[in-house]
Length: 628
Image (cartoon, rainbow, N blue to C red; front, side, top):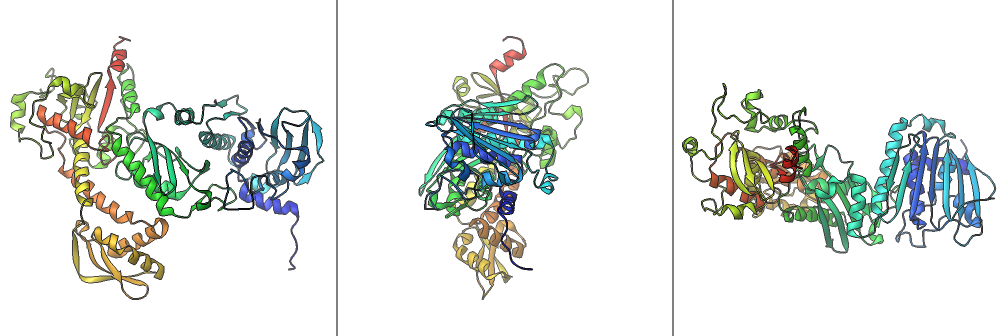
């Protein structure tokens, strides 16, 4: 078959297959063009999920009449200098408009600030019409109709109108977070309108825009991030560990103002929250990375959603370190949504309260405990032992139970202070001083597992097993990583055959691996010899462990796999070594537990991601009784 030159229309349609995947892709490209033009107001209108109509109107600088023809030609752009490594705009490839015009009916009407009138140009399935005069205010209006009419095969793969509209809304929100000083409006055929008023480009203004997009709960449950390392600046907010989602859709990341979906950033977020969230829950994050454009490649894919960093280890280390430091410095905080759900459960006719726990957003505490292997529900799930049952006060047929500080009843359980209690466990601290602490003063223990405490303006309910489990885990983890991990020597070295590049990577990290108890060395070409393994792992599959480490080093240049295995063992030891549900505690023990929680980073959740306590403000309680 002879080689021939493809037509310009076919070239554009091929490019459209990469750039324009669905209506949301069109909206993304057009909104980015408006932002690059300096717009302060952007209005998006769609119909039929964007397949019938997409109209984007802005008040930017506009396009001169003489340049409208160039605007719809491939590889024509005003945003790129002679240096491809110095990209400071959202768009730069010059492919979006011609690609859209090759598969749809496109019209562009624009007027510059100095222009006496507007001009319009159209392109339909790749055929360009002549430029003609038009009436318009300053700025640009781009209208796209009948998307993919010229490529019916692509049209068959589109989802329903609701799904396409949802994807468009997500794109607008994702971009809007990075540009708080711009007003965004999105209108659809069902008369629903998304309006995001402009705030300002200050930390407070950016957080206000985030609240517009993610809901008013997020700022109340977020921690600020601000860190710098080797010319890379990281800013933004992350949620506290007890405020999570069932998926990662509310994890927003930006590189030099560009919204990205990067696996390195996503992996770093997972690593930072690894030991405070369960595997099936996800943190809510908004992170902004700022760095020299020459150190990041945004030209990986025509859609510009992927990026590549010159030093990925630096970026990952900055994200993980900054988030962990912020979590440690934030002190103990409970998610406000927990109290709101509990308030709703107290109202007449409400369903039993179900916290959005780690395993499922609608599973009850009981299901979450049972799934995690906790002993809190070992006695079954009948109402008599439910955490939602009313307090047993000794009436009717219920067996009288000890509540609060009933010393006679607790005498049989008096085994002295807990091993983890601090030096203040036996001290009689003034109650008024304790009321000023974050978790207040212990007032009672109910259902043999829940500590009720009082602060000056709230009521705090603490799960004693979950709380102490976190405290023991943190102590074990600190001991584990403050010195070299004990190792056990293998009777016969384990030889692991690997590709040469994997063996070389492992050898380069051998010194760090030795600190975690894994001793290995090169063993000829394409192999390593493992002579020692961490004692905590016991009998382990050395071959699989080494291959997993090699894969991780190749992807992220880290050895987190081994560290995570050791942390999981520490978490199991903490679960079995913590104070059990059903044990009655004395007042000093309860207060000691509360004080340790206040001093321990991450103690707002247990090792399985469940909340360790819930706080009810006095004002909320008064509302329940009609006092407010």
